[in-house]
Length: 186
Length: 150
Image (cartoon, rainbow over all chains, first blue to last red):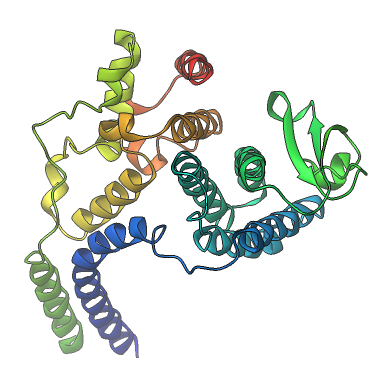
């Protein structure tokens, strides 16, 4: 029995090794296509796409407020998908450049949130929040938003919310109501 | 006993076999104009620290250890280097926008602050790559200043 197990293990190791070797080439290609994804997007109403991004962002924020790592990870990957689906074609050339930059940065943070534990998710959420504010400054939004601020987290950190009630995504239940409304948008 | 022998042979054949699977080498003589050290004025001691502690996995040129060609170690290294470069490649620093630079610098600070970089599996062999508490603080402060200047 032991021998059988060992030979199975040996075979597995062998197969795995080869499979791994085969993947090599493929991965390099993936990188090139990933970069191109930003340019091939469907042509639909822009605002709706920006609203979809916002919506995912708020769901992510709520998951962080609720200290729910798993939910935050799911919302992170949804947000990454909405960010990639954003269409900047109706904006001016200058805005497009800025938007592409914002989207690239935000996507990276959203993707990290999708695969990290809570403390990392919150670190990335900080930069992500800045990206989303900058995005909204260009695209505008239908809803009234509140930029809120927690002076304690990482030397002071902001986030966006649809409510003027403070619910802190950086500390969750530990300091749920720490922070204040800094600015009302719209 | 006979079985044990067969298995030993199988394992040996597998080990020898995997040595023939090629790996990609991360080596380059060229330091592009976009390199972090070329576009920023980096003090010498920080320069050498970054070089020893980060550049093996975060640039186009790895100083490989002697055992690097032995499988499956080579795959392990290759995988780390690939992931490392995808996150951050110091050689291509200046091709990033200011937003991206700030973002990366923030991540560098966090990774070092939380002792997540350099990886334990790396410092285990490259003892000189690990950071003392003083080195950590010094580097973090320098990176903070660079981030604020962008």
